Every structure is written in C-alpha cells, then in structure tokens.
Length: 105
Image 1 (cartoon, helix red, strand yellow):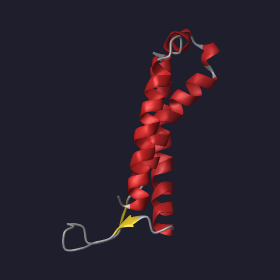
Image 2 (cartoon, helix red, strand yellow; image 1 turned 90 degrees about the horizontal axis):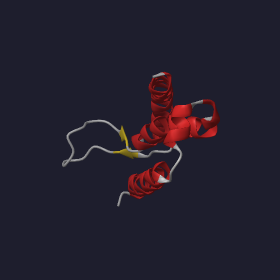
Image 3 (tube, rainbow, N blue to C red; image 1 turned 90 degrees about the vertical axis):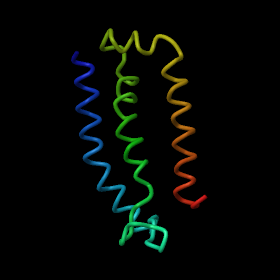
Image 4 (spheres, helix red, strand yellow; image 1 turned 60 degrees about the vertical axis):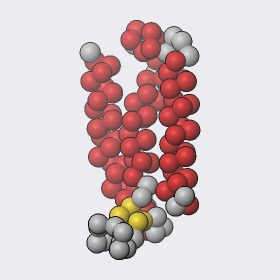
C-alpha cells in the first residue's frame, strides 16, 4: 500500500511541476500549434505536453527501480523483464510522438 501511495504522490507532484515548465519551454522555442481556419483554438497551444506526461508517469518507476532493494513489492515487480519491455515500448511511442510534435509530420 505504501508503494502505491508513493507512486501516486510522486506522479502527482511531478505532473504539477513539469506541466508549467514544459509549457514555458514550448512557448519559448515556439513549439506551438498556431490558429488557422481549420483549427478551433484562437491562440497558440503548446504541442509538447506529452513530455510532461511521460516524465510524470515514468519518474515513479525510475525511482522504484533505483531503490528496489528496500521494498518487497518492488522486488517482485522487477523480478522479470515485463516492466522493461513496457518501458521500451512506451519510450518508442513517446519518441515518435515527440518527433511528430517537433517536425509537424
């Protein structure tokens, strides 16, 4: 139960911290979606919000991986290769989405 609460708190705090930072970076580097006749929005919308989502979702897993000897729950979680396969797939999807956001594919 403590491990699940830890994951929730770390993910929530990371999301609250990373979202405004990523928004400012997107506005600074002009990684925004501009209004046009085909769009419904009237202002610039940052396109790289997935960076904040990815960071806040995977930060707790990274911390659990680094400190997995302290909890029996994390030892069981990392006992096989399935978390690493999940992270690899999610990383590939994230990088493809980021490439799409930056290059406007």
